[in-house]
Image (cartoon, rainbow, N blue to C red; front, top):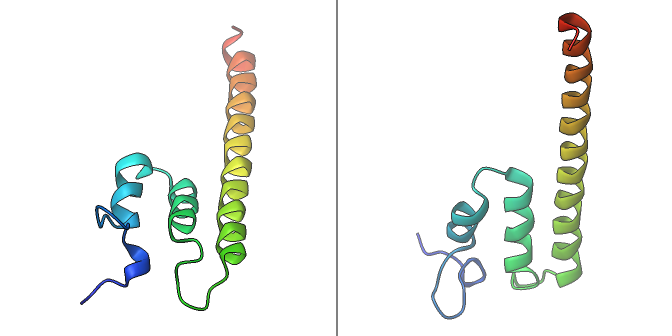
Length: 86
């Protein structure tokens, strides 16, 4: 199966997923945002602003996720302090 041109880089022909896996393979939202940015406006008939907004949406999802992870950690710390009287 031939990969569409908009999935590959111009000079080294690296695919977006290869770059994402190398840099942020352990974080879905950041990886998807990078993919949208790398391919922004390259798919025929797809406006660049649409891809940019999708990238922003995924970054916002990740910001919210990170906030919630920190909030949960603080709550667990508070519980542990009460239980173990640290």
